[in-house]
Length: 40
Image 1: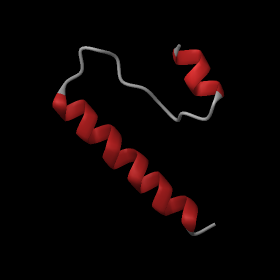
Image 2: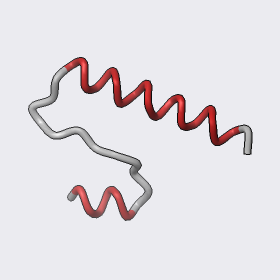
Image 3: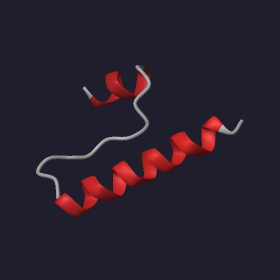
Image 4: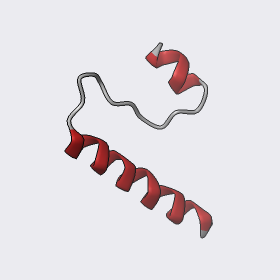
């Protein structure tokens, strides 16, 4: 399932059970990445 998601374009994943802090950090990282990509 993870490999299918990565092949479909996912940039990462979070294993269950997940920690709230890890979810928050991952969302921040992806948002920053999206902002950085918009300037190119």
